[in-house]
Length: 275
Image (cartoon, rainbow, N blue to C red; front, side, top):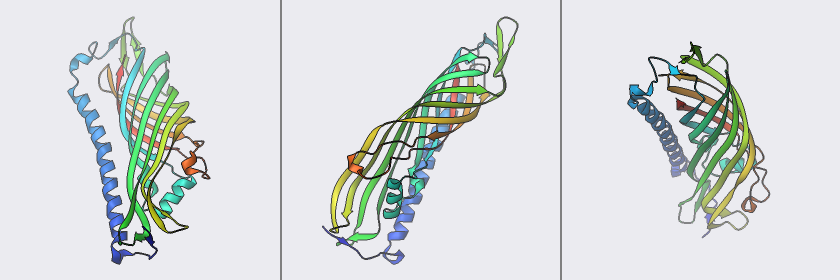
């Protein structure tokens, strides 16, 4: 099969179709993120009052916590492989945004200091077609681009106000709101893939193919957020973080490209259980 090099415009329906497709994708991603947040809120609402250890207090300061979170992540997508994809295909940087989830286990090592182990999951997949190119049957040349990121980090979180106070020898009362900042480092596992039909620009031939690169790379992150207490055992945690991941090497399927830029932001809402 060969490609028809004619430019297509709104009259041919390509630009309108691409815009509508992107709009649907963005709405679906927003619904996924909202569903995750609704599920967390529902879990909180369903938690019985027995989660409290006392009448508004715990019997002793917590030794740590576990947080399950869900939300939204946007990849920076600034390296040349992303630039080429957004120039040649009906993709934009917004297509590399999607659901973000994670699980964090923290240990209290000081009155205002936690150390934590954190595993996250960020994934997106977007269908596309070539901009202004169709095949000889006047059909769009379609493919799917996907990006998966799994950060695994050790973090230090410093609370800017005491997360709680001791009363007497046994009782510990949590603060209603406890803001924090933090830093972390570790590794990120990643997978970048393009699958579908592609144009060989030297021959104009269209052929199905699959290009995949995966691996692990060092990463760092900074974060800020706050715990809002629901009960002595439970809190809602709002978290914002920036991930710095710039050295991801692409495999031979993407020979000649710069290292993959996997940096980006992640916003989440989580349920924290104090232990």
